[in-house]
Image (cartoon, rainbow, N blue to C red; front, side, top):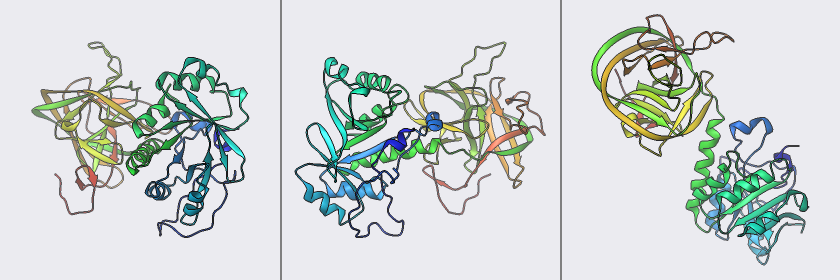
Length: 398
């Protein structure tokens, strides 16, 4: 049974036409589904991340419900607050005492554990608790106890939440030991941490979407002279077929391959993409683009493979150096657009080519051996951009 089916507290997404409708309180039930994101690596298990909001601030509540989170925790001595909010929106109220969380029918739905010592952590065992959910309050160390809890509960059907008061700490809990804890209890009285956490969820949800890549045929290759090109070194390793989406025009980005492929003259660098000149656009999370010149350590970019599967990676370093460039133009098969890119003229710089049917005949074409008529992969998108955000306006790029 998946963790998703274990959770009896759901989250309600209000109708898009209005912020709220006055509705009577509906108790939490196992039939309600939760708003969450499912990590790509866990998608086979349908293991979703959950968020409960612990607050007494009505502004936090309204902002959370508008974003699809409606499970709220109240102090057990404030039932009137739950009743008041239930007259504004459909919410799932839970009530916290010192050691447990109850639902509106006084049924125990979670056990709270304060963990500040190794002994307290050792006493936290999956088989000892009756409740489906465990809420841990990591009072001292955070990362190591979270990793130990993930390891201990990896084969359990229980759902483990961590209490956090900010989005940065919540992200740490959700990513600890790669898989992360199952959910977050965000305990805040201010809207900003909730908005930051929702933005993080949106970025991670984006990773599960497969991008539509388009085939394009190379129509021109031309030596272009010297320019300042950018090597993007990531904090992640890339596999054959993966790279970054880069282009001279926002309307069309080429899939530029990483330096993970072996060669006779230089060691493989699977963390690096020799991406192009400083003026070029690169795809970043949130459907945005950035100039290569704007990238720096700590920024996020999107790594994409030949099938359009994407993941977020962190930039570890950017190297800008003057190198000889080559201009590549290609025409899309779908709408006959001409798109171009400038790249360093070197054997380690390559463009990813499409999969032929179900067969992978070639991973990428080094630009030094690229020929007119070769097929490469593009991401075609809206053309006009303002500070990296797509907008609807008249624009000509050439």
